[in-house]
Length: 358
Image (cartoon, rainbow, N blue to C red; front, side, top):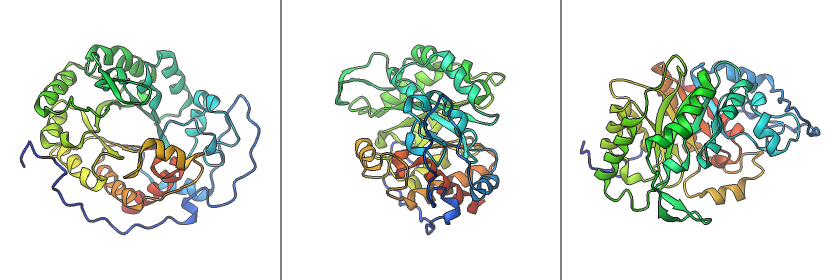
């Protein structure tokens, strides 16, 4: 395989198995939701039905489903038993998430917008049960090549881009110290490079130097943590990029979203990453093809139901996850409301598809 060719651009899409919609028992929103309870200072967990509990019991413990953040009042009757404010859910909703039979992880998205204090990470860890993991996003100050204006457009080059000292100070030290055994992938989600990546070899050399400067993760403190990189520029998703990550012991984050090839084609990168030595799967189901973040937010709120099912992506994800689980490696699968309209319901359908493959 030519190291300079796009790993996905010329590859035919893998044939996908026929999608099957889950039975009503796999969809906790199939029936009428209970009446909303008034908000209080404690977030009460929703009581799942027997079918959802049974589905959770069919899944192996190394499958860590999680949602991309958790502060959504629309999840009343799906995760929470009551109507709560976003602020309260952000601070105290994790305990209820940890009691959901399918949720064994959560994505801490707020880290991308600024450093999170050590004490906040400690409070997150204190709310979740043993076996629960967090995917932590590193801040934009180190992951975005541009300083952006209110419209999201890059205005000035970011001098802190891929600065290992910032990554260590503002993400790695507080996240690992505060989360401990609950720390899962530490994700460097690189925003669209918009010119910075035009010279592919130069960018990859810069990325390699950054990854080489990151400290080894202490297995006695964070036995389940790993570094991962998600990139938004499809032209840079080459065999050379994947081998660079593999040589540095860093995981490729497979992202189902706009701007990137479909999951069935990205699975070629995951296979190359695991060639000879399988490792953890880090996968985020964020957006459907052709949908921007703003479009999804407008179309899907309040995120209490599936609005646009995406069975092709669901089946492709199930294939990749099942393949990882068969090797005995953990799979971290983070799902956004913006994938289909409601992350907990998307996870229920995806869980059914994965269980059927194992």
